[in-house]
Length: 370
Image (cartoon, one colour):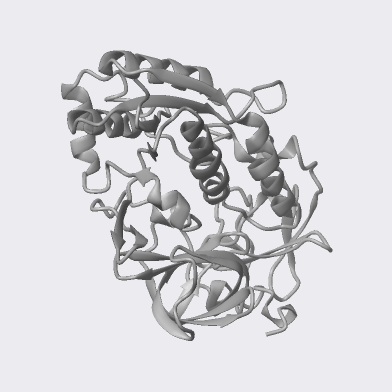
């Protein structure tokens, strides 16, 4: 009998319990393990083999079939090449957003349908419902684990075919359910960081694709305070890895990255977590996508996040063709080109776009035709 729902089994506890809950609800399910990354001498291990074995063990425990699929070529073409291209531009991309849109809720969905399934399910912490024929993406019950920020680029077709069994479940309950069900993943550590980098040093990983280009670190007044191995390896607001020691006449506050000049290979730095060089009220975003298929009537007020785990911030959104301008009620820290700005109306995720620039002193606003 063909399973009506295919669960994306990552080898982690969340997808394991998503499958468990669907099975207990009487759903006809099977699992599918996606291998999205090929290991070699350059990129090193990413624990895909360990994750696959855990997915096999969980599906065996539940008594459900498990399909294995290799999406590494699709991931390389549709996610990783964009990731590297963005870093070469001096930006900080978010590959999870693109992976969700192109791989987990497109390629995976296509394969599930080819297997005869009607819907897919994942272990993401999010909720979905349908009101007057329109599918909505809603924040998870567990606010600390909510992942709608990474799912904001999904559209009506994907949401109509997707189940999020963990949308109303707290993480502590997920662990308890997995333990009581005897699932091998019940105490497995949550994955952190970028999936294909894992626990490896980020700079050494990136240097295999973008060679080191040493340059100077400068303060806003032009003073050289150190050297860097390449502006590509840093992100706005970063504190660690600068290696700037104490300087005569300087305050003892830590140093932070406040800007990146890719053309001249200069990393701009300043002291103090709350320094004004990182503050902005406006940002410009490109290629906004809207879960409803179209944006609200503009201009409109909502709340927005410029990074994961940030509390949504009140703002005004103005649309201009395939770009939008976001004006925040309060200054925002370290708004970063390449990252996503994601819009919310209460618990509903409206969509989002890719940050291009901000009106911070080094945010690039003057060159944005603003």
